[in-house]
Image (cartoon, rainbow, N blue to C red; front, side):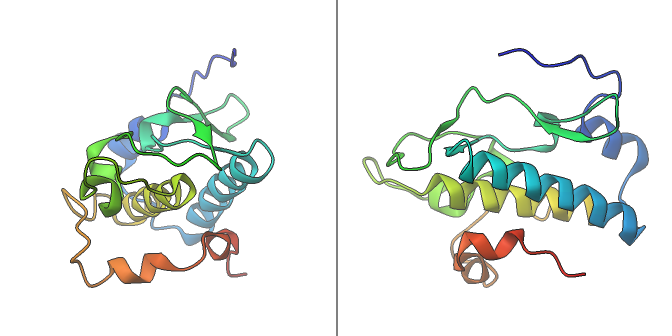
Length: 152
């Protein structure tokens, strides 16, 4: 697989330079692109990324976001038992899993997407480690399809 060279770097570089995106129109545009790309990956390519993070989202020469580094990608139908991803973006069910337990890759990607959106809006990570005991964790157990619907 080859990709175009992106002079504009990645979202990690951009947020390091600029901080958070307080302009809701820009934030909505970025989030819309991320959701669209992830939806395409899950439904059309039928793969989970499993290492979604700011560093793996390039800003193309056309200023469109492009998800990259599919080195951990697995089919959405696969029962995933190995630990994949970057610690601060990992869902609690990955961090807390016991040997041999499996997790849903689509849900893990959605959790990572939520962390990315939080960082884009607030300017810093929501936590150092996700925990299933966090009272907000249960909100993430909704159907993944509902995360791709953006409010107007």
